[in-house]
Image (tube, rainbow, N blue to C red; front, side):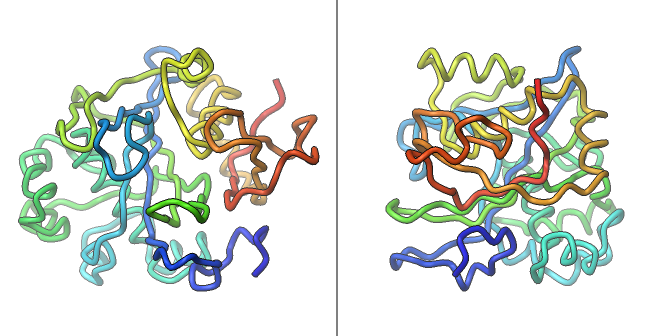
Length: 276
């Protein structure tokens, strides 16, 4: 397997008997009035990244792959999603990112949140499928404003492994984010630079995918700049790591990108980190 292949199939990734589960993360942006991102704090007892600050997200569920979504989605066909991520059933990542954002922080992307939030508990508890809720509410999801920006595969050695696509979207919701108090204990808006400063001071704990995303975002001044950069369809760039949580990840234009003490991560981005 070529570890540097951004489109490597999950079946071809070296494992240590820990299954690699497909997952999606939502990087939700707003201008308040400066560029800010929605983050949440995991509780101390979480099974994955306990006590860490992350973005909303979670594993792909069977319903996220349902063919019924053909009738409930606009702005992105199943074929177009597969072409973007170069994998089958790729649209399920978009669906999961939206669903997990509802479940974890009570914010809806791609539809009218007032109606869907009434079903938040049903989603969290697995009582109702997301497609069933959308159908019964006679709603649809518009995926046109949700763009993939990176792919991260959890390295070997931990109790859980994920193949996660990160998506960026602009918040259109007036709703104040609210965590469920189970997996997460706090949700908040923060500028990327402030979040990185709090990490440097030890106030927040993060892992490399979160840190790399914040590093990228802090080089942009507004949301239009980010989406304009993605419209240019830049080629994927491999991220290099010094330490998973104690040092900032390195991008190709960084001075020490190929230093002997770094190694290539199973992480690739197609949102450029701009020169500052």
